Amino acid sequence: MAEEKKHYMTLDGKKKLEEELEFLKTERRKEVVERIKVARSFGDLSENSEYDSAKEEQAFVEGRILQVEKMIRDAILIEEETAPGNIVSLGKTVRFLELPDGDEEEYIIVGSAESNPSEGKISNDSPLAQSLLGRSTKDRVTVSTPGGDMQIEILEIK
Figure 1 (tube, rainbow, N blue to C red):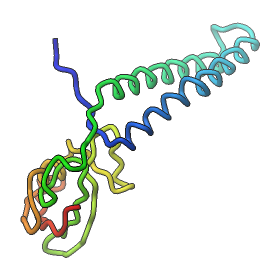
Figure 2: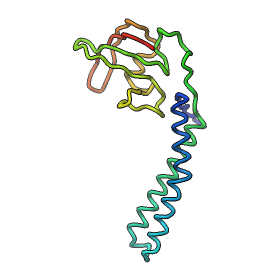
Figure 3: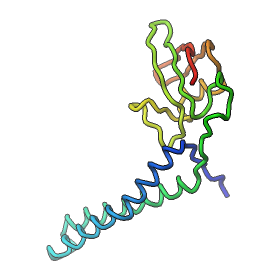
Figure 4: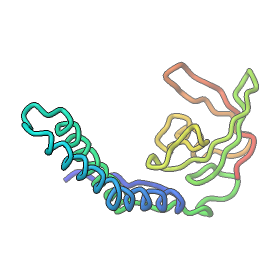
C-alpha cells in the first residue's frame, strides 16, 4: 500500500481547515440540497441543466469534505521551535534578497495545505522552500525555477 501523504501545517492552518469543514458540512450541504430540491421542481430531469449543475456542485462539496477530513486526519503540526533560530525550517519566516537586482522578499514556510503566496506563505514542497530548508542567515542559495536559476541571499530567519 502506498504511503499516506502527511500534511504539514501550523495550528492556525489546521483551525482554518476545521472551520472550512464545519462550514461545508453545516451550510454548504444544506444550500446544495435546497438547489437540488428547487431544480427537481422544474420537471423532466433528463433535460434539466439546473439539476445537473446542482448535482455537480454536490459532488464537488462532498469531494472537498472528504479531502479536508483527510488533510486534518493526516496533519502534522509544525512546531515553531523544532530547529535553532538561525536554521530555515517549517514554520519559520525567511527574509531574503534576490541577487543581483536586490529585490527583498519575505515568506513563511508552511505545508502545502495552507500555502498561499499572496499571503506570504509558501509550501515546503516549492522549489524556493526546498532550496531554503536547512540553510542559515547569510547563506547564498541557487533556486531552480521554471523561469531559470535564481540567486538569493538569506538576510533573516525568524
